[in-house]
Length: 129
Image (tube, rainbow, N blue to C red):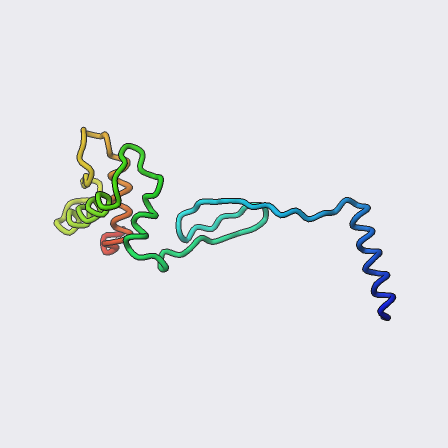
């Protein structure tokens, strides 16, 4: 095909796209997901960063980020709670009986469960189910 024929085909294709209203738009979508999670949005599938790229402290904090509902703790307090959870497990206490955050009975149960699971995943994986 000659150069002028290719130009004519290209121009015709551009004209057809213009007349049919075809266009391309760019859209930014922000998605928050746990590491290793696959998310689909608008026909695009993305797998988030793997935990293997994170230090245990980063993995622990990422697992808890925005998920604690009853208490606000500093990173140092969270690390101490995670250490307490692993210490309790190594002493033979069942995960569901651990309460690394002290408070009124039942007040922090959901947060305690999240902290214990995050600690197991990040610091003491030998206690995973």
